View 1 (cartoon, rainbow, N blue to C red):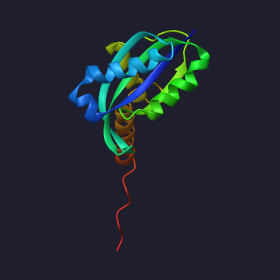
View 2: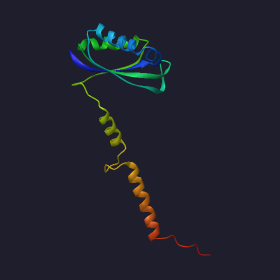
View 3: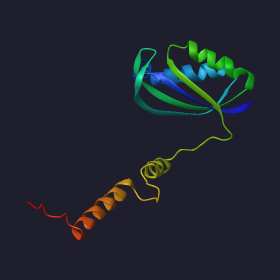
View 4: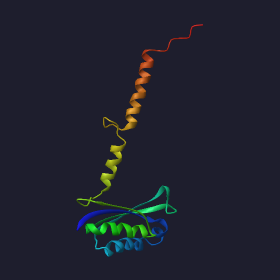
Length: 145
């Protein structure tokens, strides 16, 4: 048995009407192949950049589970045949990652920071002020007629 992380995109029609049944469907498919569910977490519903199996929206479900290594290909095949699950990604992990709201806000702050750690807006504002200072010191020559 090995620890895996599975990200499943659930059809918006199924998740909107009965979320608990959709989660049970995913967990049943995993348990049928000998998996043991450790943690299940609902993520938000998102709009796709392109259609997946004719759907424009879907809800993400993150599941951590232990499963025999030889059953993963069968699990992937079961999810490909499922009409409720639009896309599946299963990867091996060493431990269950705990996500907290503080981590999410820190990640957003790091993404918007420039090379020196300052937010991009401050860097751009600083560059604009440097341009105006140099114009004041060296005004443009007057047009001679």
